Each structure stands twice: as C-alpha cells, then as structure tokens.
Length: 208
Image (cartoon, rainbow, N blue to C red; front, side):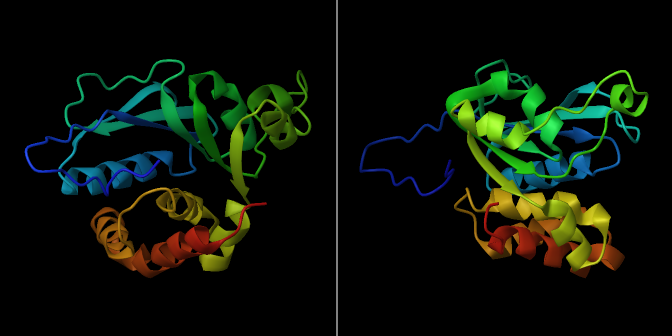
C-alpha cells in the first residue's frame, strides 16, 4: 500500500486513486491522535485529506472508529464496506468487527491486546477465542504485534498509538524524518521522546 514513488513520464499526468484507512479501537487508547497525526503527514505531502470520526464514543471504554482518506481529490469522508485498504486496530475484537470494510487485498494491522467490552465485563457475553487465527483463516492479511508491551518498553502504556503508527509506517514510502516531523507537530513536547521511541519500536518489531 505504498502511496508515493510514482514517476510521471513526459506528457503524462499521474492521478492517484483515493486510499482509505480505518482506525478502530476503544476510548482512551489514543486513536484520535493517531488519525490526526496521519492526516497531518498526508496534508504535508500535498494530498487532499479527509479525517472523520464517524461513529462511536471517545470516552474511555467506548468503541471508536475514525476514517482517513487521501488522494488527488477526496469528495467524501466516509469509507464504505469493501473500500478500506487497511484497518489499523488497537484491539483484537475491534479488528474483527470491521472486516467487511476491507478490500479483498486489504490488510489488518492489529494490537494483540484484548480489552473486554461492557457485555463481557457484565457477564452477559464471552470474549471470542482465537480471533487472530480466525481472521487469518478467513484469508485476511493480518499483521499482529504486542503493541502494549512495546509501549510500556517505550515508557508508557498510553503510547500504543505511536507503536501502531510505527508499524503502519512500514507500508508507506515516507521517510522516517517525515514521520518524526509529523510526530513533533502532534505530540506535546514533554512526551515527545517517549512517543518517538514507541514509533521506532513499532516500526522495527516483527509480526507475531
């Protein structure tokens, strides 16, 4: 899902089709910061970008979904079913909820952490077992990593979002310096070094 690197031949115009990423998780995990960071990076590269939180609740524990769409010209902020090039998921069950939005050749980048939703906490439901294996057996390209452990290694469990952005960066042609600049523009200075470390850990870590 590289987004740069196209070279125009003399007399030929390059038109980039719209690309789509869904960022999903639960409130308190930093999904909104991740979408804003990505949007800022893409705007800086000259793309038309739409970033939209379309449903869900941003308070801690509620399901959160944001859409990031970019290209030469983006008319709508909404990603329909079957359109997502990638789902970046902060939690396993949230990844499973939205698989129908993936393109046939799309991928899921997912934090292997499990966070019980309210029905599970209340005892009225059971957290599904072996979700990662079920996603893979459905033919979905799954890139899973323990983002929580890497975030804690960087200095805070709250840095899961930057770990996952680091993993996402492996699927772009942007330079590390360009990503770092976007992080510097998005993160408070007192948390900057920790978040940069989290990003680099996510970028370098191998899949589970």
